[in-house]
Picture 1 (tube, rainbow, N blue to C red):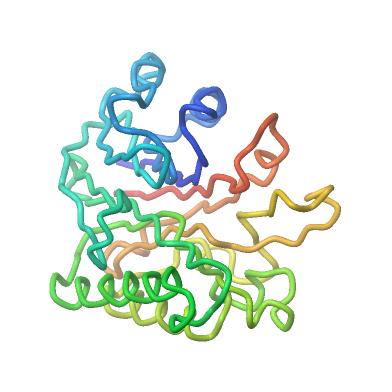
Picture 2: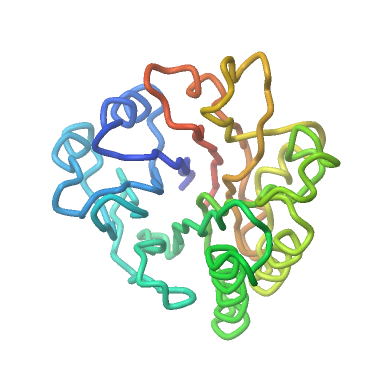
Length: 262
């Protein structure tokens, strides 16, 4: 049974519930994974999403920060969460579909502004989070699984507007890229977006700081859809919804989609 999945850092689900509802109504993904919900679970506008047919919801939240949720039109069972790096943050939740596919929704720490763990605690937390993601994958050997989310790293040269200028900027530094690659390899995760769109510049985030984000086009691909190698061939039709960045009061991220024939 084919299903379409999307991931989106919404940057406050309560502030942007109208945008979420618009995406659900216009694009009809079977599953939508949200990050940076910035809300306790009980205050997420779940009734509005249920009214659109998304009756199965698993989420982890906290006041004002982080937060992850999976909204589904297909039956979905809560499969728990993991507190990578013991940060006490709501950054991961998992759900299992009736076809046995496990969906992991992750929000990797941004890492602050200085790419040096000796002077920036947040950067160290980011690296530790990725290390524990790697160790978990090595130990658990996930199968028939999809991992999505704002991983806060643009790994490839064509995932950023300027590889040379961003080499020392958090989200594209060599140490972050290496940590992400180790986590990916440990889980035999396949980058579905780049499997489908192997060449060319591709971004899912544009800073609020740009006066005209579209004209400047200084983007980064921070949002990812991965699948374990055993089901990666079933993934296709990847797309990044760039126009969503131009919606009224948008998130600085846009949704990333993929379809799976499973």
